[in-house]
Image (cartoon, rainbow, N blue to C red; front, side, top):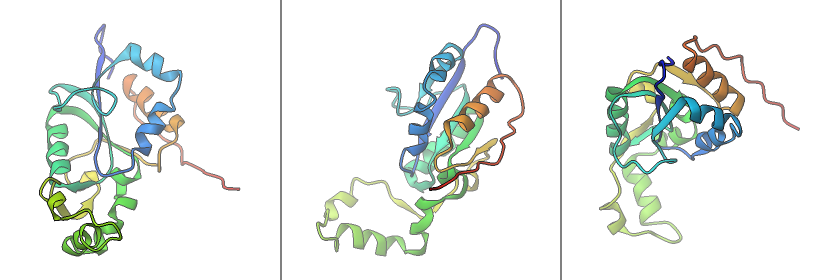
Length: 181
């Protein structure tokens, strides 16, 4: 994927999720300095771009598709990106975000905005993007090129994925083993 004397245009996007994947991305630590020499970050929570740009080489997409704004952004990402990475378990499978799928949207909104201990109020519903009936993994909405699982993915897995893609190699991730205790 590397281009001669031209930086790779990298974007990241945060849909319906907790931002843990972006936090894990920041945990790349000194590799971020090496990465900065190879890429130009053109969109994401780390830059002040309001609109998804054209001609993106690589986009990491965190989170499930949960509302109409997420759906529109996912479609923009696919039409303007050469490679789309489903970044983390919410994007890959729906994960925790999709736990709401058993509750009808109307009941969910009523419980959160009208019946909660500290109700937010119906006026909030006028400014929030409409929820989809279900939270969807990214691949159910757009074509995904690479899957990077983990909740969140370990920085080492993110580094291995980005390094392989930047060097034009196939991504080959070892199974992620976590120990507890």
